[in-house]
Amino acid sequence: MLVIPEEYISMYSETKPTYKKVYNILRATILSGQISSAAHLTEVSVSQALHVSRTPVRVALEQLKSDGILSTVKKNRVGVKQLSKSDKINLLFMDELLESTAARLAAMAISEEDLETLMELNDSMREFSYGEKNIPAIRANGIRDLHMQFHLMIARASGNHFLYKYVVEVRHLMRMHQANQYVHQNTYSDEIAPCHDHIIRAIRERDPEEAELWMRVDIRSARNVYIHSEIL
Image 1 (tube, helix red, strand yellow):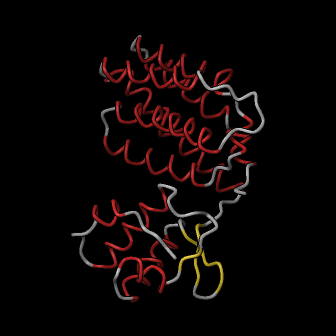
Image 2: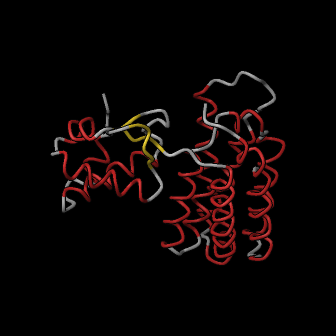
């Protein structure tokens, strides 16, 4: 049975026409990771979950396939699209382009309050040790959430809401197609947190070029693991 979070249903409850409402609800649910990459969607399951007819659902699913978010799994069934190596390279390139620009702008516009929050987030990440092999899933998800918050805060601090919007979308797409082995193979306390230190220092010192440079280093450091990971 397909379950759609009530928060997304409420968020788009007034959207018209109906197919657009269904599209927005499904898109938000998928990009937030609420629908598993192994899940299969059908017109019937979606229409029952959202209490709408199948016609607007059909249009919404086609639009999501056109966007590259869903793909046909078998007749009358669609699932979250799995990205190829080439797709991942292109997505990572886009993320680097967007986030390096965001870091540059944040260095010129960030508030002291947001800067303090960035440092707190990085300190929290440093407290996690990833030298152990069997990391509980809840703990792994927690550190990934902190990492996501760190990057999204910098994007928001850029002061450009269009840029922030696209960083959010790209980051969610990357996370949706990122295997848990990414968490196991990268040590936040030894690799990522120190790189974040450089980003924070550059932003604190209002140095746009350094902030942009270290953001590129940070994103590129995860390139090989992300590109070669597979959703299990």
